[in-house]
Every structure is written in C-alpha cells, then in structure tokens.
Image (cartoon, rainbow, N blue to C red; front, side, top):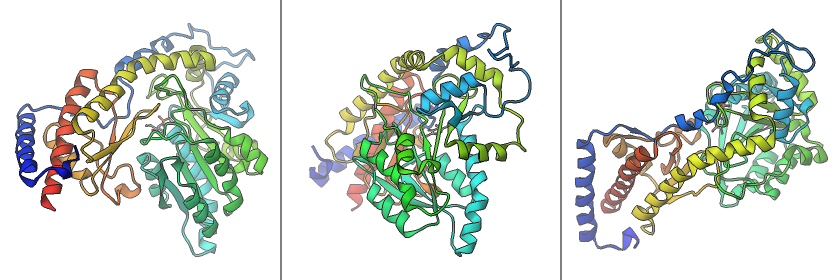
Length: 422
Ligand SMILES: Cc1ncc(COP(=O)(O)O)c(C=O)c1O
C-alpha cells in the first residue's frame, strides 16, 4: 500500500517503530560500506592465473622483447584483443596502462587547447553534455579542465536524444558528451539501435572537434542470459562521415585486476596518430609485460565471455538480494524507484524528491556508508536531491544483506519524516 494513503496516526506509529529499529542499528555499531564499485576479493581471485602466466617467456611472435622500452600503441596481440572488445580494427586501437580513466583524461588534455582557443574566439566557454545520473569521475575530469557541464536526463528508452540534438544545434561550443552506452553507471541503461544511430549523426550538428566519449567500461559485464547488444557506433559514424567524433574506451579493470589491468582507446586512425603525438613527451610505452599477460590469459572474445560468466555467478546473487530486499521492504509504498539492471556494477535508486541526502545521513549514523547524495551529478549537485547509487559488488553477501536491512529502514524513515512534515 502507498505510504501516503495511511492516516497520520498510522504513519506516526510506523515512524516510532522505525526510529526504534534505527536506534538498535546505531547501538550495534555496524561498519558496512556500499560505496565502492569495486570487484570483490573472490572476483579478483578468478584472475590469479595472470601471476606467472608468462613463465619467463617475454618474446612476441615478431621477436619484440616486452620487457624493454617502446611500442606506445601497445603490443599487436593486445591491440587485436582491444579491437575485438570494441568492435574496431587493431589499427584504430591503442592499449594503455591500468586505467581507461587516465586515457580519457589525456584525450581531453589533448583536445582542450584547441577547444579553449575556439572558446576565446567566440567569447564563450567549452561545454560538455553529461547524461545524469552518471559517473562522477567523468565529471571530475571536466571540472579539472574548467569545462562547463550541461545535464541531460535519461528517458526510460535511454538518453534524451531530442534534447541533446537541440543543444548541439544551438551551441557550437559543446565539444563533447560522456556516455556509458552499455549497462550505464549507475542507471544500467543500454542504448538501443536508434539511439546509437543518432549518436553517429551528432557530428553533423556539432561545431568543430566534437568528441563522443564512448566509455564502454561494462561492455562484457552481463548479469543475465540475454546480453545487451550494442550497435556498432564506429561503422555508423563512418557511413555518416563523422568517424573522427568517436572515441571509445574500455578496460579490464572489472574483468581481471581492477588495479592492474590494461585499458583500451579506440578512434579513427587520424585521431590516433594525433593522440600518439600528444602522449610521446609523457611516456615511452605502457606496461607491455602486463599486456602480454592479459593476452595469454584472456585469449579471445569467447574465452573472455566464459571468464565473465564466472564473475556473473558471483555477482548475480548479490544483485538479486538487493532487488528482493527493496521489493519486500518498500515495494508498492511509492517512496522509491530503482533499476533492475541486466549488467554492470550498480543499482540506481531515486527517493522522494529532496531526501536522498537525509537517507545517506541516516544510514551513515547507523554504520552504513553510501555514495554521497549528489555524487552522480556534475558538481555533486543533484537538482532534485533524490538519486542514490547502490554498489553491491564488493561486500560479502552476508554484509550486503545487513547493509540493505539498514538501508531500507533509513529509506522508509526518511520518507515518513518527510511526509509527516508536509
Ligand atoms: C563508467 C566507468 N568508466 C571507467 C571506470 C574506471 O575505469 P578504469 O579502471 O579503467 O580507469 C569506471 C569505474 O568504476 C566506470 O564505472
């Protein structure tokens, strides 16, 4: 039954009941953490064979010794793997170090002087479209380059393409857009065929040097038997003549070791050449030994899919448990809406407007850390103060269950307090 249909007396009685439970949680001095979008130790264990896999053999087929300097674009075998993951040609892919985020940062550092020059000419500012709720570290990169961020919402079908297109037509200083096209962080959206097609056309509406930051961080991270299928953006962009607007990213952070994987950047050959030139002063080459380890371990797409199935076996019960707890405790009360993703690392939950930060505070006081309210929005500002990102992957199933028990109490208590104060 909807909470707002209860009488005031009934609501007050429920409020007292929940306050008492919350006090009990406080006394229990819990210390649980739902903030981290990290793989658990069991997931990391799935890739322990990376250790020692080279068995002292460091030569590539072409005779290159991977222990030595050189090869800034990565070893050919790893470029092939990256190309398979991103559905590109190896000539369009470079392999970086352990962080795709670092490649994203560098790509923007590379483009920014050109963008800022144009901003000066037009007496304007460089701007990026940010799909919200989204990934906070994308937004932090923009902030660090003084790039103004414009929020665009998701519709149930995916990004609000009409608004994006209107903005692009109106403002040539929109130089980029952040996207997580499959199992988006945190909403779980996967872009449908028509959306990807419209992304491919954006370059025709944009000013010079526009870039689609296509962060496919969860490309292989399915939670069901029906993996989301993403249309080939680069092929569509080639048809539209906009291939230079496309820059794709992925990494093995949540496939092998989050802190010791390899990353991929894919773009047109022309863009890749320019980006390589930008990188030359800062690095002679990334860690090729680790690239070779990853190629030996992951082998090909078929083997990678089998490996990801092992992750899924560990993750599925956690995601299912969160759904069950939320449904049992607050389902039908009309105080929250949440996603039920088919892949990725997060569940995105919207509270009643104005109370996400209160829920986070209540949970913190009962020993459960949640991602700060607002973190999923540029500048940390959720205009409706309603989005909370739940990250179920890292804690054990037992800890996750305890954390959810606290969370649902905080969610209902904050909602009741809010309704009773109106
Ligand atoms: C959408 C997205 N992109 C990138 C990253 C980080 O990737 P990497 O470890 O390759 O820097 C994350 C990590 O949570 C993410 O959610």
